[in-house]
Amino acid sequence: MNNVIDQYCVADYLKQRLEEIGVQQMFGVAGNYTAALLDVILSDDNSPIKISGNANELCAGYAADSYARLKGVSALYVTYSVGAFSLLNTIAGSFVEQVPVILINGAPTNKEDQISKQAGLLYSHTTGYDFVDIHMFKPITVAAERITNAQQAPYQIDSAITAMLTLKRPIYFEVAEDVWRTPCQKPQGTLQSGIDATITVSEASNAAQATVELMLSKPNSIFWAGIELQRFGLQDKFLALLDILNHSHTLPNQHIHFVTTALSKSVIEETHPWFEGCVTLKNEEITELVGEDGALIGIGAWTTGKDTGNEDIRSSKTVLAAHDGVFVGAEFYPSVQLDKYLDALIDKFTELAKVESAKFAGLRLTKQLLKAARTCPNTDSTLGYDNFFHAMSQWISEDDVMVVDAGFPLIGAQGVKIPSRNGFIAQAAWLSIGFSVPAGTGVKCAMPDKRAIVVVGDGAFHETCQAVADQHAYGQNTVVFVIANGIYGIEQYLVNPNPFRHPPVDYKDELLDSVYAYNELPSWKIAKLTDAFGGTGRTVNHMSELLAVMEEIRCKPDTNFLVEVCIPKENVPLSIAQEAGTAVGEDEIENPNWPPAGKF
Image (tube, rainbow, N blue to C red; front, side):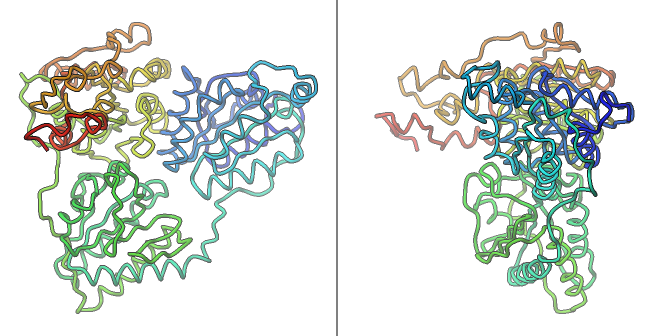
């Protein structure tokens, strides 16, 4: 190894462990406190780790998150407090959505720390509060280590990485600057998940047996393919289970299919013949899918607000299996590994398939699920959410990964048919606006043979627009569609949906009859940002213009694009328009004239 120093040191140790677990990309913003680690990596021409700088820490955090969703792990480097504070939001999102990101925070030296405590000297980037950074990150990581001693560093690094590999969530390292170059021992052995599979096999078998008995007792069943199938690489095993159910000649009425939700969209390619749609699994929706007495079998699924419409869907007819345990109705089977549970289900259904009397009524669809339109919209029409996403459904290809931001874009995108597995990325549980644009950077880094297609509202775009500059600097061909209506639409809808009703309620109150001033956005010439950031900017107002730009994008496979899609202020996705008629805004309830005569 061509190192910057002669002795093996803490920076070497962390570098070697990062390489061992498959880290190939680091995102961040340079700072002197982490320079020693970066120098060690750069000095090794054989290291697989690429160091990518970002416009700011927020962009770095979201890029690292999306990269890890597709590659399994990623790493971030920042400097103390001024850099790390900006990442609280991004790491919290990674924690909630189980994304394994390693945050490496360079800290002041041990000497500076002691002087600060004894003399009261406030160094740059410090608040005067002891260990403020690590205290903030402990609640949103599965391991947080402050490394101030080179002899202890190997054990701290190994234990934290083991926790990340076990729980698939972020970890945090805070390393004093003077420790990086201090000699330490070399790694012993290799790191792996800390789960002992042998202790959960019997519980997995019990949970699988209870699942089989529940399904046999119900006339209809449908599977919910959850996000953990992707997080733990279990998609093929899930399909193997459905293959047994649907192709055994001794199981009649072989029609057991699956749905996904916003968080798990595209964990299985949406061209699969057993895929029935991406839905919001409210209790009413479950009943429409399988009837009053059917079973919903969630595999790797989480009951997040976005996925269940903020409803508690647990009941005697639901199975909710995740990596930490399985609920079958009210019964809980703890510490069950998801892969062992799937293995047990496959074994039990394989045996059951040999029994002639096994009866499965399968799936009953009492309504046609919302799916993407098969025909192109009118090319003369004004653009809106629905015809934009209809066009997107026709245009998106297996070579694309669609990245969608929170708010109306995420809602509108649910009907877009995604042809490739893992071809859709969204932060659908944490729901931080601005995630999608820098996430597109990470997607392209993780999958260089794919093209990241970002769809973001203009409010969210204002948060992280600098990521377009990163994409151009990296030589990426990422495409960012900004749906520009000039407002924070989802925020207005939650507080007062009246501007989105057709016709609106006439309150004779200027405030309740219009979009609130604090939800209005500054007017940007979005397509012009490429003059500064790089790339090609386009503005479209009608469907014919959008289709022409989409064709141009395909004709220029090596160019990054920024497309401003101008839509009316009051336009919303169809599902929101339908709900607005009966939805009650927070401010409307407080109005003395509520409810208006003849309404609601």
